[in-house]
Length: 266
Length: 303
Image 1 (tube, rainbow over the protein chains, first blue to last red):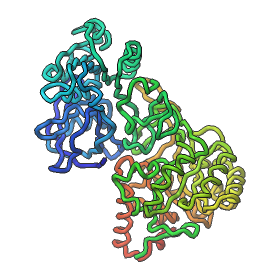
Image 2 (cartoon, helix red, strand yellow):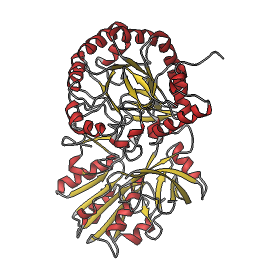
Image 3 (cartoon, rainbow over the protein chains, first blue to last red):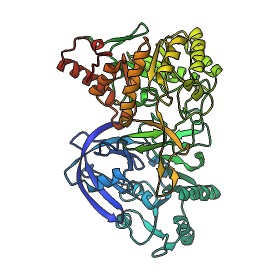
Image 4 (cartoon, each protein chain N blue to C red):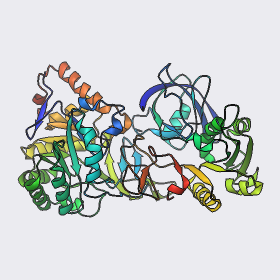
């Protein structure tokens, strides 16, 4: 069940240029339960002139406290305000939104996680749930694409995933190029792909997966208003007629944001 | 205290409804709102066959509001009747179905089909969506066209009809009179105001449709003024909307002459807004010793 709650900001820290991490704490017994990787929150700005919730993906749910960690780029007035809010202040949060990843699809498989830019954070919770002691995947290979060596979350991925590869746009570290360039250069083997990142990257991943006949899941982003499936603002073209809309449009906030790559027309 | 109001002989338990397109078919907000506490639920626009809508981006935030260019995407009247209507029929609220079309015939087909459904209490005819280029805009902007369309719909409609007016005209009172002359049972206003947003860093339109409909608190003064002008021009009831966020906002529309109000864009800011508005009107009435909410309708006085 979706709801709006007031959450406390435990702390916010800058991880890289324009990239912030905020830890949100729910009042006891009134959180969103255990969220799925790929799900997101709608954070309402306090600014009375900025009215729409900001969709921000779950980066990590801390196992001990249930606290929700989000990592975001300060792109406009809402995210800038969030990054500047002091610890202990309150923020209104809508959640839990979206479908999230179906973890059963990854069971016993070699999983390739691709994160590009601000698409990196949601891959961390997926890596954490698939790898490690309680993980259900056979192997997790995370490939992270950054603009430069101004990394964020790299240490967290190194602690979580079995292997981590890096690509940078400027060639200052890892493979000079995209996450797919890094995958090809490394020659790593895998059975299934999960990706989040900018649209050109996701188009490349879709093509890459289709050429190899590999099952791939993409976490999509679209301009959103309500976040709960009512306004039909955030649709994505689908290959087949969507069961809810009866046209070739699915709601990113409700049927998504995670889609099987072969089912979306991007 | 009385909070019930009446539109075309149909009683609403309170004057608060939802604005079409901001509340899905009601189910999307059922986690947040007891729909039975609302005067009515007004659905997203329904057409005769499924509509694809516009390309994305379809929405953009602006100062104090938002722009949208959804393009009336909807699954069509048959899916609506089969899937969404049974849910609404169980909610102990009035059901108002918003009807859209490109041509007169398309409107009439939907109106005729919904005439078979007892669960539908009223129809709201969307003659004013700024994001659909073919047909609808002309119907809503030309008084003669609006009167003719209203009359044709009135002849075949089994339920009361509410004509939803566009603010994108020089004189909205002329359109209100045309709707009344055509036989409308009520009018609702305002639909969104056509706007535009440009991303100056990228030097591009923010919306794929270039223009979109402006809604939210930033349009409220325009909406209140238009409700007032229409209330002076016609005798049929008016449903007022435009940026309503609180009981006081709703009362402002009632004082201007609206019989009922609708909560739109602010559902996106807080999914509980409709219930807050219901509670807020009650608080206002207590505070001002108003025994009957209907006493507020058109009760504004000079400064």
